[in-house]
Image (cartoon, rainbow, N blue to C red; front, top):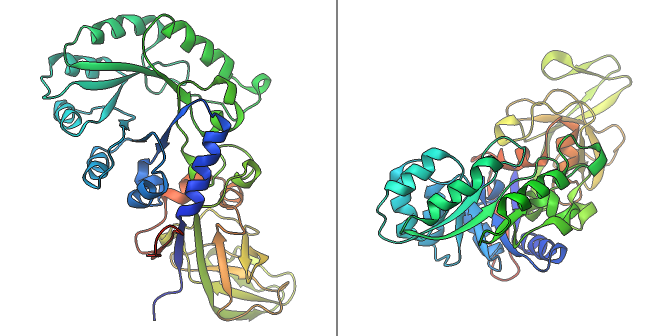
Length: 366
């Protein structure tokens, strides 16, 4: 009998979330961001779910090639661009668009002799200070790339640091980044892309020709709160069962480090899921779980293969009770926030050993 732990990927939910992104900015085209194996949801699943996206964006060249080999014919954007000269040849061969964010990449492009012209997305650093050219460099770099015979097009992008924050509370407000972007690109011919999930949901008026939704496509919130507050549906549900029950007395402890100590007699349910499956070891006592559809709380430190929950308030729960760790009925954002992290990390951390089921109303389930 297999271990009772399963991750269910809901293709319909992902489709719904993409439609929600489009409703937020109906005038823009959408790059669906599928990096990190589609935030842990599977690249092939994302390709099915986001069939209506105008393009797919990611950072991994091998995954981009797999998209092409699987039949994706619309644009594909490499958000970190080329890492070496061979990548430029691969981009030309597979018709992959490239971000350009540093001088080394510009020189590689100038020296390259690709078989097909390149589509480039020139990145402006508007204050996040990760990737991109500073405003003082931007126009000269644009002019250099325009002069390269094998450059077919140049678009413009930047990335917001604090689109999930109120304007007056932010150290780097969106309005400041937008103003820098508009100044740097004024009069230059090219499409624009500025809106991540947070901007798409909360700052729709500042988005350009393209939006780049990521976490929202998978049902997660890009800021405080949960995806449900933005009309998003959970795309990943991690579900297990109780495999043992311990009756403990007041004063007895549970798990490594004896962190949880019972204040009164209670029952402890042992769940087949641990940090080797992707559940956060940092989850504290009280982190919410669902047991037979009712809220319960984590009790004791998460171990490699198991975690423990307090069944005291749930007298009907016991051996073989269903446990939802996150997803349908329990927002992944809530679990992440209790654990001092973000939903992105939990999605991406789903371990290979966890069996995955795919639910898709438009075709038979896998």
